[in-house]
Structures are given as structure tokens and as C-alpha cells.
Image (tube, rainbow, N blue to C red):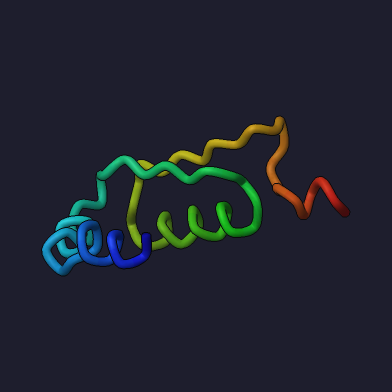
Length: 67
């Protein structure tokens, strides 16, 4: 799977177009520490159309559930 993704989705041409289009719709699945961190990093990098999808009614993922 890694080889397919690397060779088909993240070649230099696709990466360049993703980096320059800050209005792309980006979906983050899960509001755990990774999802919230990724969203924060994207917003700080100038991406404006980022949506977090969470199955539960609260943010936090396993950190919230198991603490």
C-alpha cells in the first residue's frame, strides 16, 4: 500500500499542486490528538477549508475516552 500511495498520490507533480492550492477541501477523520494537531498545522500553514469528522459528541479521541 505504501508503495502505491507513494508512487501514485504523492509524486512531485501532485505534491506541488496540493501545496499551492490552499483552498482545497481537507477532511480530518477523528478528533484525537493527531487529528487536532493535523488540523492546527494545516490552519497555521494557510489552509482554510479543513473539516474534522468525529464519531463521538466530544473532541479528544482516546485521550478523552480513556482518561
